Amino acid sequence: MKINLPSHVEFMKEIESKGFSIIKNCVPKDFISSQRSRWIPRFIKKNVDKKFVRGNLILGEKNFLSYSEINAWCMYRNFEFLWNETDDNEALDLHIKIHKFRNKLQGFSQDYGLNYNDSNYGIYISTSYYPLQKGKLLAHADGHKDVPILHYMLPFTFKGQDYRQGGLFIKDNAGETVDLDYLVEPGDVIFFDGRNEHWVETIDSSQSNSLGRLAVFAIPTHFIADSLYEGLKRSIIINIREILSKFGLIKLG
Image (cartoon, rainbow, N blue to C red; front, side, top):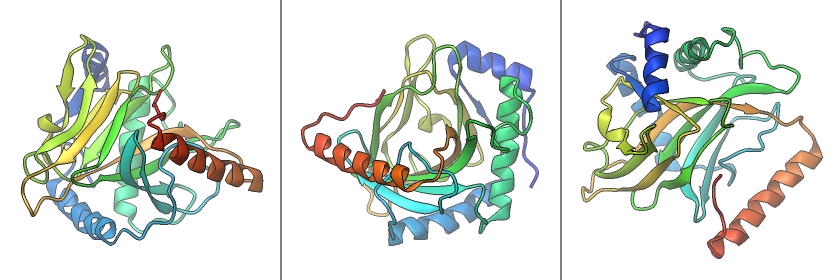
């Protein structure tokens, strides 16, 4: 699949200036249509494997679909790991191309995050669905102040078409709140500096045929070495989060 990518130098200047930028018409619109057909039925069926949607991912684990609803977030998230066989080579190839462009923007080697290093750093593909009336993610920032984490997001559903209210917002470098979902159309890709505060406001719509918010991005992380101990620790974390959430004590960093 051919995708349209801008000059990495000029594009990075815009991100450094505003905190975000959008590649218009990056991805063919027929690919967006095919991905809607691929993912929407999966999330409608909601055959959830786990309750886990953030952090503490174990090297070598199987792909899974998760759902979690606490005071800090409400979403379905599908985890696809590069060490597992994919059921969509075209989509995986696309994400690798965009990730390599992200590496170029940050001055990293082309394959950084694709070949795991001593600290088990790599990417995974996250397809996230925020359901109507309750899908959300509280405001937070990612990474360290001196090391940017560039996020990219490819939306499959669109504000004004598939939902009316809510969506992805960011504080730009001037401290202004920007409604990113309002700015994109099918085929666009958003890049933003994860250090800037960002959040997903509750997805809502008055239309009965609305779908909710569906988007995909490749997330960089440090995976945990596979062990029984780590699996048990993650289960404990999930249970603690659910207990704290009942008292409104969960906050994102």
